[in-house]
Length: 285
Image (cartoon, rainbow, N blue to C red; front, side):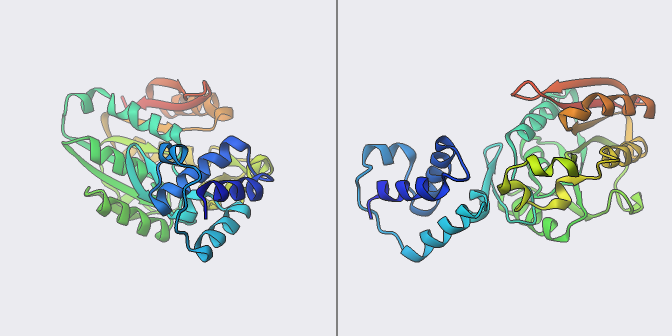
């Protein structure tokens, strides 16, 4: 089959779900993973004949046409120049979360290469913990999640990326914190924060495929995880330790007020690459 023919098939079947640019993004990710064809190579020879197993690409295209994200179809995603395994038990890493990692890496203690203890709460596929462990030489990292399936993926990702992380099964809302490390320098979390009422506004590839437990919170209590994590951080952070959050743009300032009331100091609010309120950092002082 000509690879340009496959591209046309992608556009035909995926046009009800995605814009043309998004379909091309999916297509080029797919051919790179399945046939090791780079985007520029395609444009150099779009009419080239490629050996393709009909059964595989037809099944994959059918999954995509049903809204399954390309990352789940190929079983991997990239984050901060790392290749990570993903499946429907974990969220697909977002570019905004890479900005959160950059913020932490610019922190004073990290920049000075001071020995650092980091705790990542609600780690999912382990993206934040692994990126930090990979980029900070003098650090010890712990990561927790309520999902045992997510922890399996996170452990595999850590092993594949040659970093050592101590993974712990823990429910932020229910479990005792005795199993968690203390005197921590940095606590970071990108917890569930999308109110249930917003589910109808999400693309089907998110709402119907990514794990609900990692996405949604009750409409009447959207800060439920932030409140719990703030209380945990007040106990486990060392004096001068920093708490970092990724947040929902609508609750950015409400979260900041809660952190101030909880006793955190030196709050900093950050916008993401799209100019939306997205990140908060504060210190235990």
